[in-house]
Structures are given as C-alpha cells and as structure tokens.
Image (cartoon, rainbow, N blue to C red; front, side, top):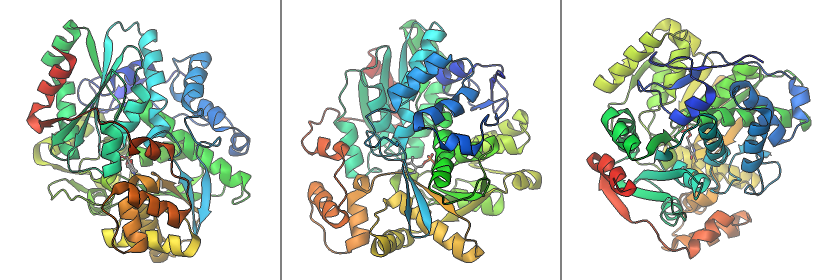
Amino acid sequence: MMNILYQSTRGGEQDVTASQAILKGLACDGGLFMPTEIPKLERSMRELAGKSYQDTAYEVMKLFLTDFTEEELKRCINCAYDDKFDTEVIAPLVKAGNAYYLELFHGSTIAFKDMALSILPHLMTTAAKKNHVEQEIVILTATSGDTGKAAMAGFADVPGTRIIVFYPKDGVSRVQELQMVTQKGDNTAVVAIHGNFDDAQTGVKHIFSDKEFGRELADKGFVLSSANSINIGRLIPQIVYYVYAYGQLLNHGEIDEGEKIHVTVPTGNFGNILAAYFAKQMGVPIDKLICASNDNKVLYDFFQTGIYDKNREFLLTISPSMDILISSNLERLVYLSTGCNASQTADLMASLAENGSYTVNETMRQRMADFIGGFATRQEDEDAIRKVYKDTGYVLDTHTGVACAVYGKYRADASDATKTVIASTASPYKFSRSVMEAIAGEELPEDEFSVIDCLHKVSGLEIPQAVEEIRSAQIRHTRECETEEMKKTVAEILGI
Ligand SMILES: *Cc1c(COP(=O)(O)O)cnc(C)c1O
C-alpha cells in the first residue's frame, strides 16, 4: 500500500506521518496538515454498499492512516462506533420530501461531532504509543457549542490525557451549555469566555503557536494537541459517512451505480463539507457540494466573489454551531486550488491574519467550481423546518433547516432535480426552543425541559439519553475568563 505522508498547507512541515499529524493537530507554522495525495477507494461502490459502518470506516481510513496497523485501526473503529450510538447503522439515511437526510446525530452528544470525536481519542492514544510520547496530552478546544461536549465525552477519563474547552458565554443554546457544564471526568475543564467563537478559536491558535509556552509546558510534562476540525484525525473519519450514504442509496434502490448525487452541508468551519469533497476525490460519484451558511454568510460571499472577507458583524443566530467568520478548514481547499502551492497559501493566510481578507485568482476559483454557496436567513430556516414538518412529519434541527432551505432554493433556481443528500448535523432536541418556535409559533414555557417535552409531543421522537441526562445533572464547571486570559487560564487549570 502507498505510504501517505502529511505536509503543512503553509510549507513549514513535510514528511509527517499520519500518527504525528494527529498528535500535533496544527502544523508548527500555523498551517493545516494535508495528505500528499488523496487516495482512491480500492473497492467499487457496489462492494462497499454491502459493508457495515465499521467495515466502511476501515476501508476508507486505512488509505489515509498508513502508519496504523490493521489491528490498531480496527480496534479504534470498534471502540468508537459501538453502543454509544443509539442505532446499529450508526448514520441512517432518511428520505423526507425531496431530499435524503444523512442523520449524523445518533452518538452520545447528539450532534455530528460525535462521528469523528468518538474515534479521535482512540486514534490519539494509539498515535502517542506509536511515537513514544511520555508527556500528558492536553487537548485544547474552542467550541461553537457541539465540539466541546463531544470532545469531552470522548476524552473524559482517558488515561494520559486532559481536555480544556473554551466556549462563547452567550453564543450557545441552553442544552449545549448544560451538556458542557455538567461534564464528568477528572481530566475535563470547561471555560466560558467573554467573546464569540472566533475569539475562542483565535485564542486557542495563539496558544498553539506560542513556542515559549510550549517549552514551559514540556518542562512540566505536558504536550498540547487539538480536537478541533483542523485535526486530520477529525477530517478523515468524516469522509466515511459520505461513502456510506452513497452505499445506502444503492442498497435502497434509490440510485443506479455510478449515478451522480449532490451533497448539501450546513457549514461553519468547513470541516464536514471538506470531508464530502475528499469522498468525491476518492471516487464517490458526487457532483455538486452545496455549502449552506446562515446569516454569517462569509462563505456564500466567498464562493460568489472569490473574496474572503471576515470584516463584518458577527451575528448570533438560531444555528449557533455555524456562527463562524473564520472557516479554518477552507485553508485546505485554498491549498488544493493553488495546486498545492504552500507559499501562495501562506501569503493568502497572512493576508487574512493582517487584513481580515484575501482574494483568490480565477484559476483557483475554477478549481473550486464543484462548490456552490448558498445561505438562509432565520426566517427561511424556520420556514423550512415548518414546511418539512407539515408535509412529512419529519423534524429538522435549526442547522439542518439552513441546509434544507438552501437546497430548496438551489433546486428551484437551477431547475436541478439531481438526488441530494443533506447532512443532518444535530438532533432537534439540542435546539428544542428554536425548533418549537419554528413549528408551533406560539408562546413557549420558560423552562427548557418543558419545551423539550412539547417537542416530544409534536414529533413523537424519543427524547435522547443525552437530554435526559442533563435534566438533573449537577453543574460541575463555572469558570469564566476574558479572551486575553486564555493562556493564563490554561496554566491555572494545569497547575503550572
Ligand atoms: C459543527 C456543526 C456544524 C458545522 O460543521 P463544520 O464542519 O464546522 O462546517 C453544523 N451543524 C452542527 C449541528 C454542528 O455542530
């Protein structure tokens, strides 16, 4: 088998093994790790369609994680995709209206982050053994609401690891906040920052690139890593479900072998949709990738104009996990569109850091032509949720609602009825209040759990374990800090 290595999008690191790239998270020059090439699937889609989620995961991930043995990788996969998921199929595909919803929220924290974060801790501890890492691994994570909980659920009480999560104090749903502040595990810490998600993400990136702090940590026996979607150990597991979704369409007789489909993804940090693009490059017959944004439509504008410009107001929406102005993983697409030119990518990212914007040239734009940007306002999101519910009884969460609205507009405007898979990224229970407001439109009770019970009544969906758990759970984390104090807070938590 070909030995795939990893390199930084900014040229500062080369010949890095998969396990090292997973351990590091971010390259030392601030760039993101990319495989030297995107491997092709070794089996036909028809063959893959006959496989379980776990076996599909092995077929995909082995091609990227070439320094993991078969036994190591299979152990990671089997530990991750087990009965933490409430369905054996792990990622069911459900037809509702004129689209297929790929439900990525059946894991322990009921958002799609579980798809990658239930395996990342296993990949990371395996990688640490492989590379004889003696230090304690400290996972630093900025979250717009879902990553934090999913990462803690994965890393809680994993020997040799600690995890510190920063979330925007007023930027997450009540259920998301409760899920985080009630997290158990002696190695977990949660901090509410007085800022938005971009502040949290930028703060974490600064800590990573602070060489002096890195040395200080090393002296005390710690090494930093990241559970954010910049980690290749998150991107690669996310490719699996797009391969699996195509297989399900084949199995259900919905498409013919080789028939092209579109994929629509509610997007924030650009990790999930980038995984779909990787699946396409690997050979899955995907035509267009429809990138759905909410009112923070920096990506829509980018695909429209070729100008990425984060200089704009940061808006809080009812789809908070997509409230992002700096979509980190876009750097990987930019890099690919330069023909893997690291110095050109580094220049564009320097411009982003200095001026908050950059412009890509015509050639690069042509290489990104598989992507179509769209956005949906709050009103359009709510209308989409209500319409799908009225027409089919199926309940979307507010992020999937954005994708549904954007897809609906695309389908009508382009008169294109190509079969489309929509990534369904969260259980509606995670955003019960906004979902109920969209469906019922009437006064709702003050109490969050009464709203959850209302949602249960209208949807008939079983209330997930993740929600039942927090009804009575004790609050264990109350720490808050200013955005300038994040490094100091990390030092305090680690006791250095
Ligand atoms: C994280 C998240 C997204 C955005 O995914 P990206 O990979 O950051 O683009 C969308 N919806 C939900 C529910 C999420 O948790």
